[in-house]
Image (cartoon, rainbow, N blue to C red; front, side):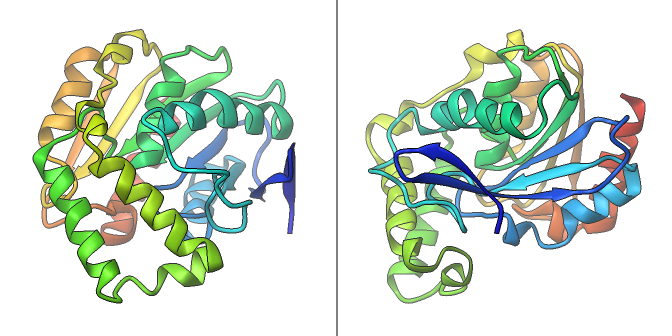
Length: 253
């Protein structure tokens, strides 16, 4: 399996998807309990539809990457956005244009990264990203925690192996901590200059349309799509619709 060595026994697992290297790379950023494998075939389908090459990788602590070195801090999404992601891009696609595609936590990572105005970033697609903490977000995390503690969500072990319990606890403890209830990245939104596409389900149990509306109000160049009868994972629940929305956005770029 291909890995990037980050030193200190830390390795990042990644997969490359072939495509036309004259087109931007699509860089996929998974959700808060996600992984490369949990995207399933969606990255390959979008790359095939757009002709773009792609990168899918497991953030540190997830999937086939090395375990977390410690608890997730209040700034864990910033660390992934400002330290790990630039390292991955510099190492795998130096001097190449790219488009970030982030789901949930990955969407927040993408927004933070886009606010840094990296010169090769051509666009950002956010699927159910968060820019502040809502009561719906906390309720969703609490519900997932109750299910996990009761023996549910066992399917996560397939993707994260022996790291699963530590990862889940780090994620849930972070979001449910007193300090994290004040987490907010709205300040970064006006700095985003690249075109943005936002996709969210109307029945998302981790956030409301307020997330999308806030990003759209504070970012200059935004298209948004709210999908009916869809919850937190539009790329699996409404695959054909999401593929079309994202492919059209990429073509406009």
